[in-house]
Image 1 (cartoon, rainbow, N blue to C red):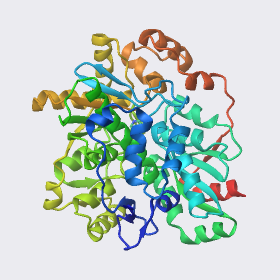
Image 2 (cartoon, rainbow, N blue to C red):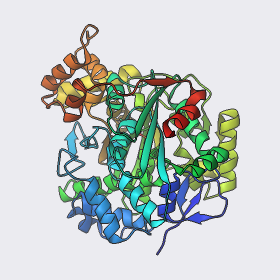
Image 3 (cartoon, helix red, strand yellow):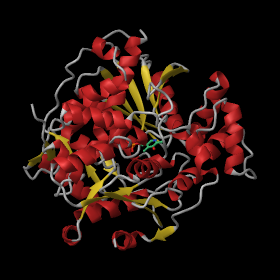
Length: 494
Ligand SMILES: *Cc1c(COP(=O)(O)O)cnc(C)c1O
């Protein structure tokens, strides 16, 4: 049964999964969504006996229906291998009344590796399948973690080039160093004097610039995206929710059919949307708890039904969540509007014109799977310190946003449903903020001094991804204004 994809802004046409992956964004500026959802055809008990790669196949075959079994399995094998520092791929650790789903065991120690280690393989297969003869140029906006994970995934991949735009003053020192030291002939990294939303809007504008697209096509190039607007990013992210449930079941922490809650530190709404899709294919998830930092545009949206980005952009200690335009929310809007693309298009046009939109009452009723929460900066630091003191477990700042929101939710709602906190980054990636929370007085210490100290405190070896950049040479130092992004793209392609 083939599943085809259509745009959330609906021009009627549908495309195959592989075409959706190559295109990234629909021609009308909308996001690709599956026409319908198939259900897992293995029982929860059967899934509980499977390892990560097997579950990956069971999930991905439901969405990427024009990939053959051999193609999918090859992509999966190439992705989830020794690049991860554990065979389990996504371990689940019980700490302080919750299960931490650690998604940071891949090459760049953030959860973006979960999808970006497989996306380049999916894209290569998709390109062959569709007879694409052009070089694919991956355009990426990053709030810090997607950039490095996409660079690592696409570096050296034949038939592709990748260019990453990041907010020059909006990422952690480690995040920046990881990106600007990236090797490879097909990669380019550019800092922009603006925030993540500027970078993301710039990239989306380049995508929708038909004239530019045509000019580049003549030169043999075609754009695609490694951001979570690409369905090829979203689908692999569904896998770890299924895997987490299967793990809880195998370890007899739940019984088959029991509901769980998941709490997700959210920025662009990709990760939590994958959780929503996991529920749609049959995983018993009760509540999807959406955790924001002080850029709490999503919290306000869940409270009021009004999405309003007209507010100050706050730089926080969880920079990968410093976002005011959560792109993937558009997919949820489309579904809660009962797949009414016209209504969705109106709202998105209001968002781009006025920076806000209101959803209808009946759409609000369809939001009952979600709960919003947010954490203030001091609470994030307190949670890191408190959980460490109680248990010895050190979490990163993004995970701590989720942990803070979950603790409050549990307390206020007396909801003791087993809860999975999605742990999105290694604490080493945000060493300064984590050490500030744990010991304070860090002003006169270098990042690498702090890293060694954190390793002792947490009793965890410094990950290779960090060791690598200790002495690595800076290879990219381009900085441009947000208006100059097109110019940088053209310069790179010449
Ligand atoms: C990207 C990222 C997030 C936010 O994920 P979305 O899918 O954009 O909601 C949270 N934490 C970390 C560490 C990230 O890199």
